[in-house]
Amino acid sequence: MNGLSFDRHTRRKLANHVFVALTTGATLFAIGALFLILYSLVVNGLGGLNLHVFTLDQPPPGELGGLRNAVLGSVIICVLAMILAVIVGILAGTWLAEYGDGSKLAVVVRFLNDVLLSAPSILVGLFVYEVMVRPFQGFSALSGAVALAFLATPVVTRTTEDILRLQANALREAGMALGASKGHVIRAVIWRASRPGLMTGALLGFARISGETAPLLFTSLGNPFLSFDLTQPMATLPTTIFQFALSAYDDWRSLAWAGALLIAGAVLSVNILGRVLTRGSIQK
Amino acid sequence: MVSATLASTDPAVPRSEPPRDIPGKRRDGRFFQSLCFSAAMLLMAALVGLILSLAWGGWPAFEKFGIGFLFSSEWNPVTDEYGAAGPIVGTLITAVLSLVMALPLAVGVAVFLVEFCPQRIAHWLGIAVELLAGIPSIVYGMWGLFVLAPWFAEHVQMPLVMSVEPGSWLDRLFAGVPNGANIFTASLILAVMILPYIATVFRELLLSVPSHVREAAYGVGCTPFEVVRAIMLPYIRRSAVGAVMLGLGRALGETMAVTFIIGNSHGYPTSLFSSGSTIASTIANEFTEATGDMHIASLTALGFVLFLITFTAIAGARLLLGAERYR
Image 1 (cartoon, rainbow over the protein chains, first blue to last red):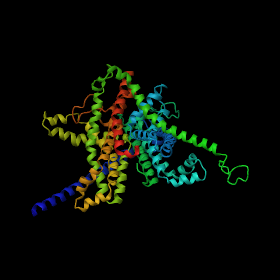
Image 2 (image 1 turned 180 degrees about the vertical axis):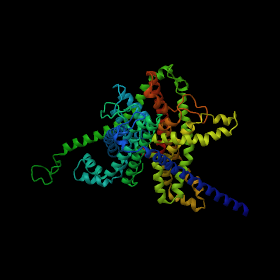
Image 3 (image 1 turned 30 degrees about the horizontal axis):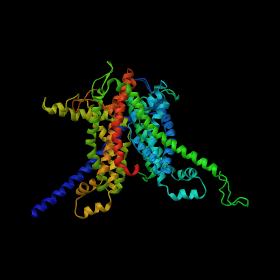
Image 4 (image 1 turned 90 degrees about the horizontal axis):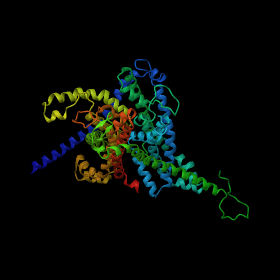
């Protein structure tokens, strides 16, 4: 009897130790994967990263070149997309938080927004191709921006709603008591009070889209030359990386690594910046 | 805008009459409200438009091939014959395989961060895990193709193929071109990509278990393992299913990383280490180089099928995870 209970005690202890070891191993695996990926990015990317990357356009294979057109294209398309996404997202989030309470419609919108939040990005690309590229017979930077805006808007909407709900009702009542209309209170008091949160929403949206490749493949397409024409195809960093990485030329591949390092660095720092801004006061 | 009408000295104006600028303000308020409302409706229209445009674009393929589109694995742009079975099976296999690999890891990470790790370190480890989710999928793809695949071919695939008996069922399971680009490595990459999503949600769920429940279990002498297994996991099981389905939704729709490493061959995958394709990778690879209208229509129809599959997973996940948000 005594031996049996001792046995069971050891067994339970042993099981627990194994469990702790397994969970520790899982965490080490995840952290290890992060560092492995960052390590190979830095090792392979730093070699190709020099001033030419920012000052020269993409080269034909075998010649000196950089990624200037792709970097600029990415910046233009992402900024355009963010302008659209911030306007629509903040307004929609405001409606959900301030006006939609208790209505069935708000529940539906909130649900669909949550679904859009994790919708496959390639389908968004197909959608924009159907409504913007096919009817006008041409790939364009503008359609790329719209596709990215579709991906960023749900993020902005969700964060805006969460942030506005955090504001104390006393703030709203104080504004109203001064005789301001509801819309005025929202714009002049609530939005102002939640400015860091709204910024975070925009940053998270930006982090979501800046590395996206799939929706750009059939909207902005890509362009080997520097272009500022929004109605024409435009190069972006991710699509150029895609093209270069799958090519057979070593210099293109090393440019692709440099581009990947750039884009991962940008996305990760925006992510961290967004986190610092809110200091973890909101959940994803 | 707000004109001061605080001290109205005119005795002809009764006190109860509202100030002059109310109608203007009301119009302004209504305008702002309808602006917000139309933004919300635009979001809804986006999703409806997404479904309709995919169905509309894919209609020629559904019309020509009928229900057989879903069950034929023939994909031949030369004869203009298209069947979606290969990519559909590839999508489901890679998604399920990656989930099988990612789920135990994700639960492990979440439990470790909540139960065993000092809170200060847990905070930073949590951020590191979330950063894993922030890495763009094209970077995962490049890493998979240039780092993981060669390593995997040399250190896992070759030794395995060498050591198994030719002709046995293991040999058939491990058959394939030893270049590391196959459905197994694609699933492995997918697993690393969805791990942070599942782990983050699981961590929040575990933190939501009331501390008195946990402490009561510890109080009767449970080991941490028993507390997690018998108390905490059952407590969160409903939302946990939601978290898993959210990860599944991600894995199903992931494009770039898979396109890089899955090998891109049509038809059914024949072994664990054979190349294959998913719906998303097929679209990404062929759409801009499509040869004819029927090719484009078939790819769009594939997109529609992918939408139905992912929508089911994501909608289910959201309903299980946030029931109180939709009330």
